[in-house]
Length: 570
Image 1 (tube, helix red, strand yellow):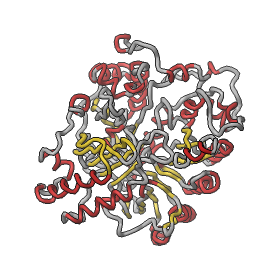
Image 2 (tube, one colour):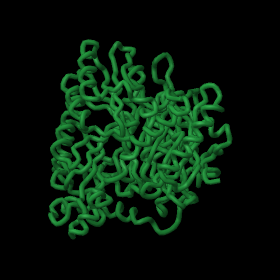
Image 3 (cartoon, helix red, strand yellow):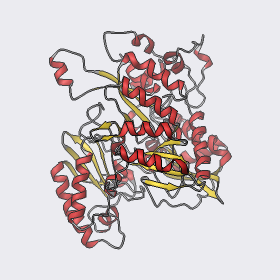
Image 4 (cartoon, helix red, strand yellow):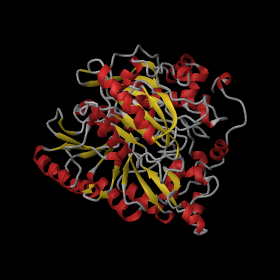
């Protein structure tokens, strides 16, 4: 039982009631599925479907017009799949490709920053078909949203195949260990046999009311910080010796979401708890989750994530509790360094003699665009590929494990369908945005639809100032919830209103420093005017190989964020 001095007293948030009365996440979802009067879900079910991997949305571009016609908003569902480590087989890809083309409003597959894919625009009558299709090919969407541990990320490193395979196996084991035990998903979506008593479905890790808030976990292989460890609650940093994984450094308490105007919310870097051997991995994962389960804030959801628990109870108290629950003593962290982020676009050869092609997918949106039939191209590759696909946490796609005999054929298909473009700049591949409008109900400003033009302007500024080969880690989010990870960018835009953003500067290329707000609530033209001047200074005043984010801090343009809670707003 948790130490009572670390429990937040007060009236529980409404979500606590919803979870507690949900009959182990069943609610009345099955009843809502038969309601033809609405395209959405009602009452508590609106929240409960998230635990099944879905969010209810509508097309905001046509919301006002439908209201004029006295019609309900075009309610539809977004599904996020569970795909630990982002690995998917060609036959699975073809199945999701077929479903997206025939059964969604938008026809696309969306690769996400959570190293998985999303379907957007699934109408309620198609939901069971969708889940049963996924189940048939060995995929589900259990616990990819809601107050649970979500899809476990793992570095997409196809080059060092042996260490990556070991790390990936741990990502899968962590995911399975932390999953909800309820059979609600199977009962509702797969027509599974109903249990006579839900008392058989105890939740030893997640508890009767699950976690206070969402929880994110990664496994990362230095020197590549492609999963942005400081955006996550729990991170296992792989430590290898002689090409073999020997253990992990454990980082806890990262997170990027905040609320505009509420200074009790802030982005935060994860704390390094120390090193553990491999055989303690699952015990430590469970201990971190259960400590957060028991000590997390169930009164105020804005302060309910792990990062706020560490700030409130103290890092050492949290760490000691994890040691106690896991029966482990953290050793001193083993040395490691992050030197890269992002993905290695193009071909690389692995240590096993196989080839791996990383395809840059702008915004992760796989669709047949005019002159660029990306979706068709990916399907054509899947039909001949003898390896697997790896979805990255940067919205790109790796065609992994390509045998030498298939390399030329796959490259030809990719080029014919616009999946390889030699002219794509480093700046474009170093830029990223969340989905935002028109589907996300939380969006305040454009992100995905704004990014391509914003990058073109940024490319123009770099060329103007004699830096056409340089790049800046640039990210845009439509709201302050952090899905596009702007709070780990050198230049981060956070949506404030239509066409308006807060401009943040000063993150680093490695993803180990949070940027600070430079200008608040400014328009697109003013953003580029500020960046024009700053890039001009960078070109003239930078030290050898000095990145933009490091320059603006060294030059005093912006103060560095050292302690997230203390100086993010100062």
